[in-house]
Image (cartoon, rainbow, N blue to C red):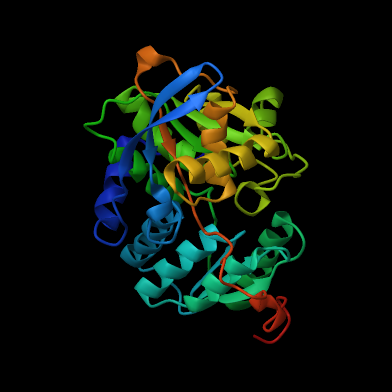
Length: 332
């Protein structure tokens, strides 16, 4: 990786840029029962963010930066996404008055496709896997001249994600625990952690260990994805920014199983009446299962509940049946 990692000043600049267009989300003291006893934690309720996930921070920062630089093309924006990054891009594009096209994997949950369409995005079938969707984006850019947005691995996406950590100022807290897909959130928070002197713990499913395997290999390497959190944590290769932050010792990897994620998701609902998606449950799973044991001397860890774009319990049948996805070369 040749580009530099964002530093605190970059995150502060991003916070200034997106102030008033994203939400400041609550920090909620709670307690989690673990095999070793109760653990005090702080839940960062980022599932209440404007787009239903933290992705709004990076998306708005990226789009508003393009506007500042005069680089937002008439063809608009295009992004590959399992749902959350696309939803955030659709909101940011609508704010800037730009059309947005989102390439999603074929099996993307219908609730996320519905949400994208409700925001005015054009949703296209990018193929069976996340790598396929990125190839579709590259072809779309060459055909249309649209500006490509990466869901996690650009400077502005990472700096925007890091603004979450600025909202922890004034709180007595220990490590910040985040779910890792492509790793943009962890890398952004690490930019603040390096200055504020707190550690970042990156939690991955055992079926999507892109950061874990990259650290073992000493470089980003492709992994096989087999997890219930594939729609939000399905990056086959860790992002360059995330790997650079982790290799420098700013982000540590912890693994949890799908069974532990499911148990944690149920626990979060039963104990706190918070509905979150599997990626958000992963961070609670790390503590609930004992996969990671916080040091009580360090202060209560901040568990980032990163998203809640969930299946709609009121749906009687998937909207996909009535309005199927189209491919790149199909008519809109």
